[in-house]
Length: 165
Image 1 (tube, one colour):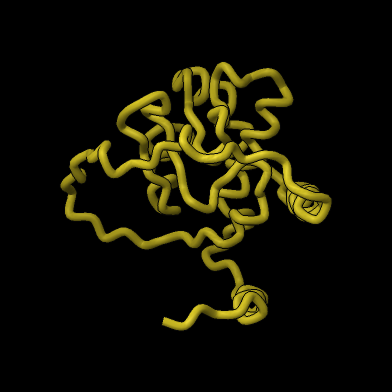
Image 2: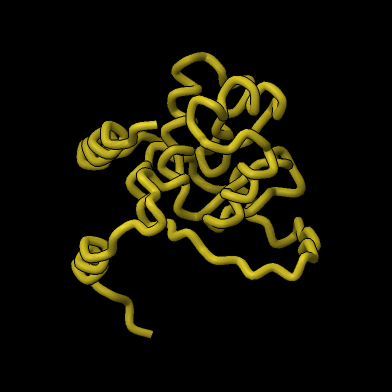
């Protein structure tokens, strides 16, 4: 398989338009929310994990009552989880991050990567997939995600300003 050049991808993204009247994609809102919640001292409710590759809702009830109404139209944790599934997030079922969610393009300090997360159409069969902790990544064996260089930071800052929640 041939890998497209970044300019090919950028051209495709420039031509594609959001469908369904979605003003700001869910992953962008989620990323901004995690940063703002941290700045507001509410990391005890929801936060990035230390490595920056997943996040965890520590207190679901407080999350639904205090944080979700500020950022999302959903009012139930199950609706929030459905959005995570529609964007390809996986739930961690074992280890220190159990109950958290991750996506290979959803990384702390890398807001711009969220633009490459497509919403997927899931035709479910009503049967929940069996958890397989042995295939889940061990984020603690990887390098932590740290703030990037000036170009990354500028891209993040500009994109974060455009996300109106």
